[in-house]
Length: 117
Length: 320
Image (cartoon, rainbow over all chains, first blue to last red; front, side, top):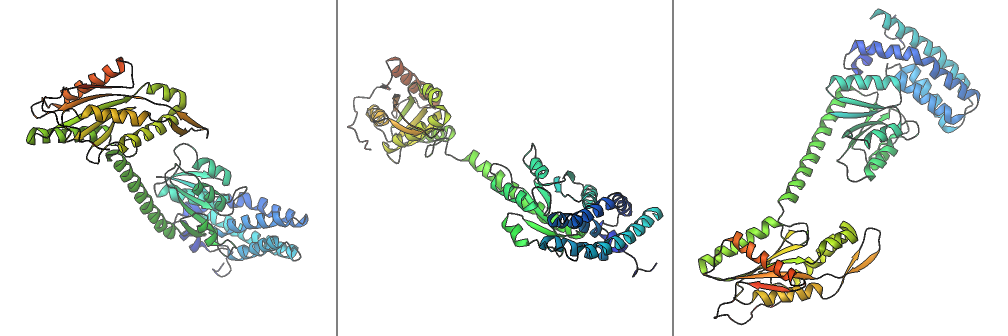
């Protein structure tokens, strides 16, 4: 896999933890534990049309993927956060599908990183 | 150094905890605003806090506002974390009282330099409060506004006695005590007692010349050193002070907001020091104290003089 295809930026993420690879692995493991729950909360908020809950849960997931400089996932989560904030959830299901796909890529990459380290 | 880390997002919290610990900080973590506030107002609170803006229940801005509103705590340096591209407005955070803000994800080098600023500011705050404490301790003013403390009034007495020994300038020494002052404290509490002492201090001062020294020896106990006070003048001066203090009741506002009028009287002892007198301050103070106690034994609210005036006493020169 080339750098352009990676769902996250290892170098930038490493820099953000002061070069502590072990800590980054620990963070990745925590992410893999929690990410399913975070996604489920976003899905539920969209399903029930709860804009405030979407705003909050998308913000949390955005923060979570930011730790790994996963730009694509972060951008998609930000769009959902903004939709939750504006109260207009029209495009939310489509963005949510895109988020699920991207999150799968991030999870695969991060579990590979955790295993390899 | 202890630092509070308030961050609801688990991965960012883990990351910051580890990095700060590696840098030698003792990290106390909170997952939301109320938990952060509980730590900041708890025993031995950290003086440095890193607060995430968006937190459940109480956000970082709200926590900053509460911290800045409180009084009686040492300064807390607040660093706010904001999300990049978010709608959070840094100015709002600054207006809420934060000292600094950083955009997430936080770059460690950046954080480290900002923490250096925090240390510099906290060091300055500590120096400032130490200096203020020292000034308060070394201030010549005692617990009553405008009055010298015990140490300073005794120093003033020594200075005047030295003048007497050198140049023969007579000096009058007056010791005064409020009658049954303990009753005032017991009935009206510390607030009432302090207000009474402040007013008595004002009344005494207003009846003295600028060259006279007035100080507080203890609770309700005063010492007056009247410079160039000729033999026989100390007792009339004491009488004037006695009348001034008890002239009218003292109106005080108590802690519960009630106002009350408190009547006080004062017993005084005086000692005229002449050029040929024994001018050792310890003996002098003991003599004047005996005189004051005699005034109390005689029924309070009066003056008792020792150090009988010599035959060449001059007319009263003391004016209010």
